[in-house]
Amino acid sequence: MSITNFQPLDSGSVPRFAGPSTFMRLPMATPEQVDIALIGVPFDGGTTNRPGARHGPREIRNQSSLVRRVHHVTGVSPFEQVRAGDCGDVIVNPLDLPGSLDTISAFFENVHQSGARSLVVGGDHLITLPILRGIAKEPAGLIHFDAHSDTYDEFFGNRYNHGTPFRRAVEEGLLDPKRMVQIGIRGAISDVENYDFAREAGIRIIFIEEFMERGVDTVMAEARSIVGDAPTYVSFDIDALDPSFAPGTGTPEIGGITTREAQKMIRALAGVDIIGADLVEVSPPLDPSGVTALTGATLLFELLCVMTMQIPAK
Ligand code: MN
Ligand code: MN
Image (cartoon, rainbow, N blue to C red; front, side, top):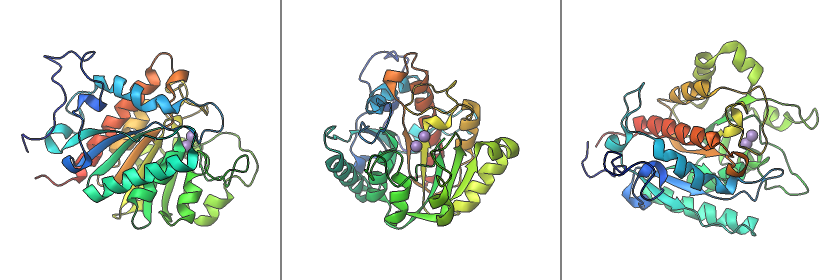
């Protein structure tokens, strides 16, 4: 344990509603200074329907002021065990989609060079593509929580939107489809060929019905065996959750997982070699109570704790 690790503001001396709004009240840092870099990507230019996820990082920073220090189940104390800091936002251009993708991938290339692992808050789901361009130097595995497969080919003639990132990532060799699993998929689809690409590529889709039948432990054991020991990315679309738990998102689908299941599923990632993770699609304008952003902030802490377990003690 290093006493030089960045620590959150002490809630006994600076109240949680005061002080700078950073992720988990950590200091601002550069990627070179940390093992795990918390990063915002406030971009929702890939959204095809209800937007607003560009405001996700700012509101999740706000709600993450409630995050405390020690995981109550695993005992992990991330701020003592690793160096974590808020590495700021990627400064995107909301009027330039291709340019923003390049800006995001260049930012994450730099994080990758620094040796830090990225823990990212979106933004819509398209941001996962340029993140992977920056950090996946060989085809990575993927554990993907979502109501949607996000493997469409295009919308409105455009191949880069939040319904297509995983198809592009497979085509670009950033992900190994044989080491990809999507969990929580559900909802009516646009046509019967909706899942053909994923199936033909060998992506394992676990629909919500199968998940409910088999339960968290069995499904997550299968997910771990699919990705194995090799580098794996974790992507959590907040709409994997039932809209009764997370209403503030652009494409809600009823019949989703509960927050308790989501927590258990993330804890079950312990042992996976997580090279980076994101939490996307929280849309504060659609979230007047703030509960979706609070849920996002809390799941971000769960992700930080499992990533901490993978980083060797110094
Ligand atoms: Mn998605
Ligand atoms: Mn989704």
